[in-house]
Length: 206
Image 1: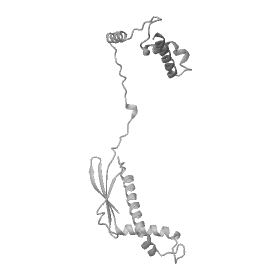
Image 2 (image 1 turned 45 degrees about the vertical axis):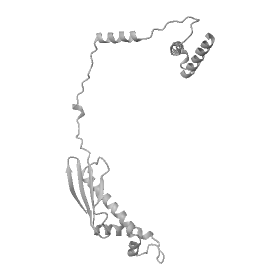
Image 3 (image 1 turned 90 degrees about the vertical axis):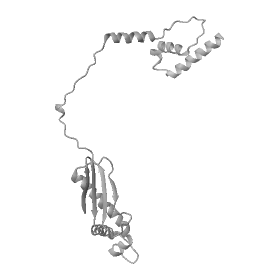
Image 4 (image 1 turned 135 degrees about the vertical axis):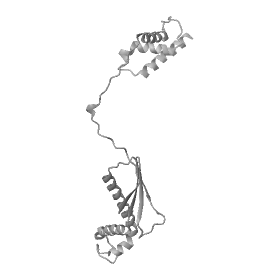
């Protein structure tokens, strides 16, 4: 098997992997010999089927498996030897795939983009600087004044006065009962209860 570099630009890598027909045939024979002891075929005892017959019967299927295993093995060895780590799955293309026939050499191209190497860092030499923003007292006072001026001013309503804003009532009621009811009553339950109170008051006033 021959592996030749075809591209080396920045992080881009390209290689040509060539597997001769003899190497592929040897791989097929090895796989058939490995399976031979367990093969049963009419007219032969188990494990006694001739290798030539097995090759004629199962050669095509074993050929594809042998080719795939050999290419995968070559890729694994390449990454182990080179130390490259592909960012994504390498792109594999078989040269003259449509014209290839049994007995021909196999040549595939492999391209990928390698991850950049990360240098060792001595963290003991890293210094951190804490950034503190100094507040402007005048700006803070202005922001507080704006917040205070934009706050709603709630006033007590007369007993006979009709309630029109349910939201304000809910906020007042929730504020009064927060400590006592927050642990035992669900917030939605309180909202429904308040809505019923407002509805009853409206019906009464009408």
